[in-house]
Picture (cartoon, rainbow, N blue to C red):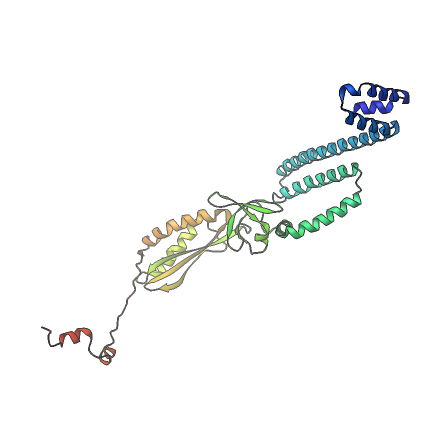
Length: 338
């Protein structure tokens, strides 16, 4: 190619000399058929045409290099800005951690889209044509990937309305998923289950079903049930449970704790201890009270009840007489029976 450029810039007499030199040595290097083809090609290839081809190739090479450089710089700048935004958001307490990933993704892909459009424009493709092609491609992709677009739309709605945030413990997806929210992105939400397992849930599954947020409110109520025998002193048992709740430091005084009789089952009475606590203290208080309730009732002389159910079997003699003698009676009246 460099040789062609040099040929294009040589004077006409030098170009003719090249043809003569080629004709003198053609029998030494190439077969006759190739010689005639090459000679015909060189005879029609004037210096003006060589200049045109060289200029077009030069412009195309420069445009390709510039487009590749724009793409490289766009990807590099987008990564740097994404990392910078992540560090900036992590150091700011006023920025919600739920919005950090989506804001970084929007910034990164916005820069990359601009880089792609700039590279195509540098190649001579009009921006209006790019927008038209992207619109048609977006429509086709949208019809083919309806589920993915549903996840994106659901992710935008979750980030806008924010029924839960990073750090909340939720139960959603129709009761099929539960865990602590770690990250909310455009396509899915990352949860950590109580046993430490990481679970990725599509946003459409959370948006299309009710979501129960256990940690959104600052306080939670605990209903702890226990059983006593009907022969025990039930008012004394209720008073003992009330005293236990009042002496527990994690139980809130407002609303006040309450001990009550819920129902009677067989030979037992079901008591309920209803208390309120801070959300962060809920599970610790639940385990502590569950451990102390039995000892408190034992001190109040309320034993652990045993469920007793009486069964009364009634024999219908009238039906037996109507049906005639039984098999045992027929056997005893047989002539050969001894």
